[in-house]
Length: 441
Image 1 (cartoon, one colour):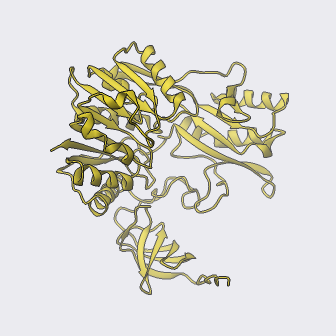
Image 2 (cartoon, rainbow, N blue to C red):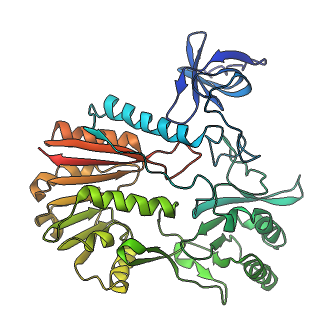
Image 3 (cartoon, rainbow, N blue to C red):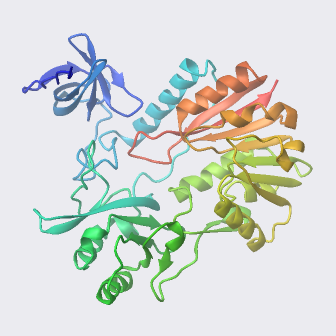
């Protein structure tokens, strides 16, 4: 028997906004049922229309703000509310980071059953033009007679029709129309589904995914785009291993960490932090909290390119970095060689699998840095006491798994949560990055 689909009310309704959800939406109740409302802020009274009705909660979007919150501001981007790249442009930057700190405190208490002894001051950097990594959608739209390039619309798979992007680095964000016009001129414009953007302290690299081989004329169009707009243009015609620059377009992507006298090189699709300025502040805070001494051995799990490993090596006797991606490990080792660092060792290992036979798992370390993906680091936590780890610095991109792992560390493994705080890696969005310091009791 098919379930009858609920009919959405046609007319907007009014509601008082009680709070902000972890996704940055306003929380209200209507007829006793929770409603999550895009574009609303805590303390406001709004008119909204329903966009979706479900069994446990409904969803809606603001139509009018009847009483605005003090922290409400006018969005900088004319596409805000349609584009899915941002969710908080209507909220003053300081209020955004305070909301993220409150969100972190909530999940640590509610899920992790822990509270830090000290709250770290939030780390912030520039609120606009910060994104140096992005994946842009591309689609030729026959009804418009042109190609669209940008982030997807909020709540659906359509590409947002934008002229510029305020959170992308200006080297790309101010050139969206030029990129779209170049794709539009290609014979394979309908076979280019995405463009990968990558940059460090270098001009941008644009990796065009091509489902069909480009013609000689197409290559000329892309080369001309690179020359006129200051891009280095690459092609990807199959898997990541197929990525290659157009003739004369190759560049060594890198970013500098001047405080540690380091240059980190990377490939266009390697994971790097999107916000370079915030990354530098994050490194400074992480190393200050770990307080590594010259005679200490440090373990860096989920080490990637060595973003934390190599700065740590400037302070420690030895640092061991472990990462599941063999390509990243190879580049981490190459970065160590490039920077003449010889007190590091890198290993490739599945950190979600069995670790008993890993050579580093039988060594001793006084301090540990964890920088896992959204899935967290629960699989490795039980190893920490037997490795002798006394201090753990956990860098998190997802508060829920940090809270879960904090519960394990504190309530099962004998560590205490010394301090925690948020980092605004993604201003104008509800995404919460954070850092937490644990010490063995």
